[in-house]
Length: 67
Image (cartoon, rainbow, N blue to C red; front, side):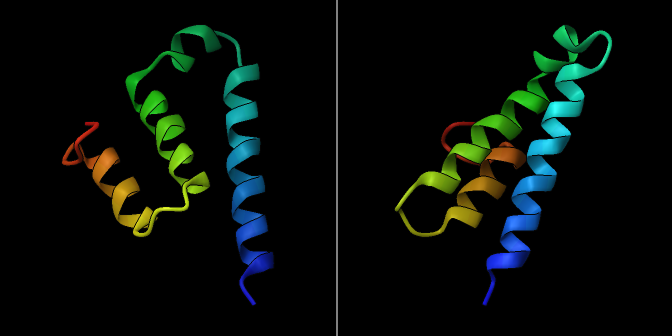
């Protein structure tokens, strides 16, 4: 039921990471803490633990244990 929407969101996110990485001056941007936090948050998607959305939001807002 949600497959196409999730597929689209994942592809869009991956494509954005690709564009950032390919851009001129990407080395500095790629090391930006905000982008690092997004890449770390993407790791929660692979987890089998519940409340992935909460964990991602907390990690990005600076409220989580890994903030």
